[in-house]
Amino acid sequence: MSTAKLSSPLFDSSGFLADIGAWNETLARDIAELDGVGPLTAAHWKVIRHLRQSWLEHHTIPAVSHTCHVAGLGPQCLEDLFRGPREAWRVAGLPDPGEEARAYM
Image (cartoon, rainbow, N blue to C red; front, side, top):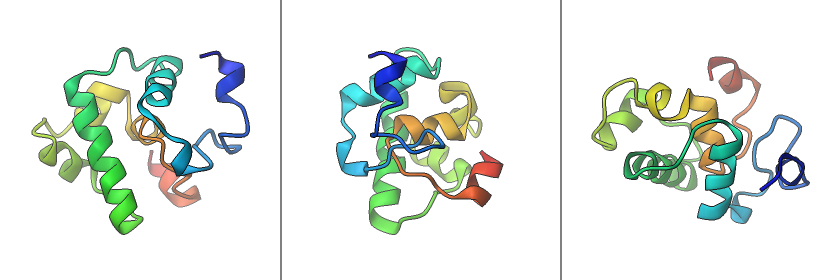
């Protein structure tokens, strides 16, 4: 997928998916490639699924340490796998978490 396609109306001005319902695994792979995350492994998918589940159930950003623990990974898993929380959130296809949360990403 080209950068032009990823900057389409699917994404808001901060680069987050505008409609969580538009997310699918192909789009996740495309975002990961664009963000320099690389091929998505089983570990990536554990984190992605946990982030999506947390958002869908609670509409909150789970703590990084909790996310890594639930995925059975070390405490720096978002840095190690995604280059950081922002990229993990984008690959998971979640909406803009807000200005304050973005500051910590």
